[in-house]
Image (tube, rainbow over all chains, first blue to last red; front, top):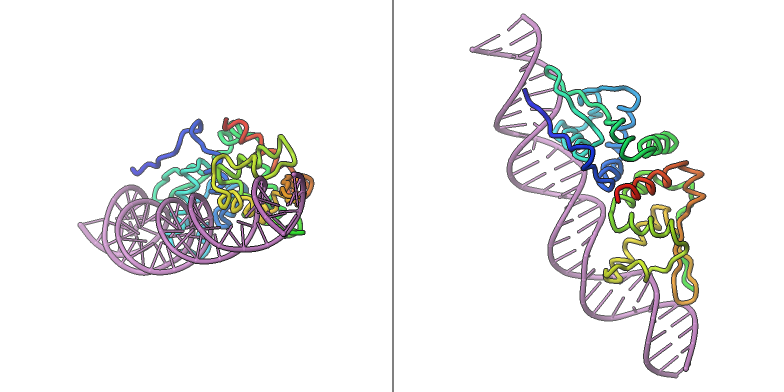
Length: 103
Length: 103
DNA sequence: GCAATAGTTCGAATATAATCGAACTATTGA
DNA sequence: TCAATAGTTCGATTATATTCGAACTATTGC
């Protein structure tokens, strides 16, 4: 059973989180996960090659935004909402609201 | 009299704002401006060469975070707080609080 | 065991960003 | 007018990100 490395919440870097969110595709992934959770990678591909999708999920994971769980043959992703809220209160919500507004 | 190009608030890009904030030096500039405003570039150099400082201010300006006004021989910078708040309510405040907390 | 599915890893190519010195511009104040 | 100060612009270098195909791994279900 493959398992993922997930950074501990105490080690989250704000700049890494902001950088992860600053890519339009990754921001869209986060937006989508905020609405529907958890989700495998496949429904979030959006025409991209798998290696590219995998790379972006890895950025989100290393920043602490996304938690990935292996479930059978799929890898289920969810946002680390509580931990993020605890460490950086209001941040994710404000970004999601802003992303909503940015259409 | 030199004047700066400042994007209109309606054209702010959320991803550009997040990217501008994702650099530790630029985030520190924004934090400092939030406390003391306006401020020339010089007191924010922190040992960097002027060309590098100028580059980072230009990133902040193009993203819509900073407004620069030529005052005599110095260029005074301030945050575009109201416009940002209007467009992306709570975003800047949440980032500043997070930056505070990130030590 | 084997084919199918989901996603990762590798490596190379390309794009984007950061860094820095040197030359430049604009303004002040003597 | 001239020196000094504040900051920009240019160009080159280096570092970091993104993109993609191809080969790989792990799991399921037949």
